Length: 209
Length: 209
Image 1 (cartoon, chains in turn red, cyan):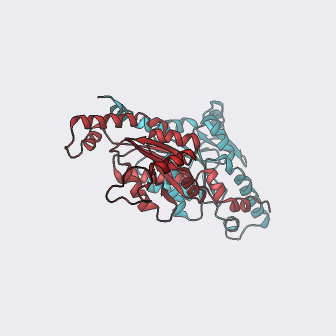
Image 2 (cartoon, chains in turn orange, cyan):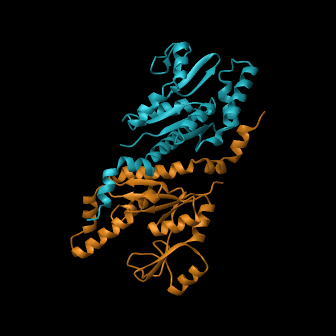
Image 3 (tube, one colour):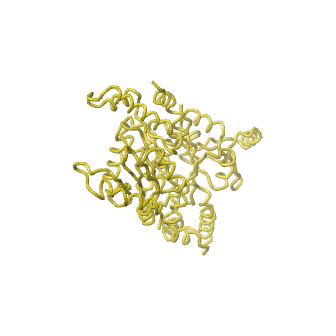
């Protein structure tokens, strides 16, 4: 059986990453061949969030114990809360032939790449500077300082786009979704994956009569 | 502007390669972004064949002059006839941003790879030994020697499948066409291609305000 592929998806806020992952899973993940890794976090559950679906919500002590056990592919502390990607959970899915998406930033991506050099990195960009600004300004209820901070965070994230193998410019949602799906589908046709998936066929075809 | 990608498509007879290329061009080549390289040959034109469409039909002297000028990516002599892929024509299309398909065997593929290491190799396999035999037997009007020879040629070609980056098992035509399209579409999303296609956007997004 073929091993699943590990995809790292990064983007600045406002590029449409979450919507793309959601749509990809809804439209092409019905056969169970695709999954998004559910992160662990120590932050408070927000209204509408479900444990095990949006995050695995754990206590700080538990999180630190998992760090000590090297249970994470990557982890980070953001505004006093811990976030991490469980290595075991991802490995289990890959072993079952499931393609796994990691929705992480460039720093997490670097950590994952060190442990999993075969991970396929995809970076998503907004279609223009104006559109990015428009999305970051949102409903116009935030201070200009807040918006400037968001913009500088976005530029900082985007400055790492060239550490990824694929670059998608999200100028049209359906079109970008189609491209994202193509990256996933083509990765499954790579020689090594196909050798695993079709070893019996290859033996039969190459047998000299 | 982005440079086109060069794809090498190889397969044993009976794997469905020609039908796949034809369908890919019909369904997804309407925007002029995709082309199949038209080979040069010295063999006689067959009924229904058009010069410049199926082949560039040239005289032996002309073909030999082109070899001397190193005008070919790859060439071969088969049953006394010459066949070759014009380097200039392919280079012109790539420079225009057109993705070019080369429909060649493993030996031609090796020659091309030496000159164009970025070429993306795709190998197509039939879905089973039985199906391959069925297709090679055809209408049952050939001698068992002829069929055995075809089978041994097919096995010989297939033995080189692992020199290609992608492996497509043609078990369902539409499904395989979808996978082939995904390989082409995903190649266009690769970092280097996208940097060429979106250099102005990247400058604008990364400019610090």
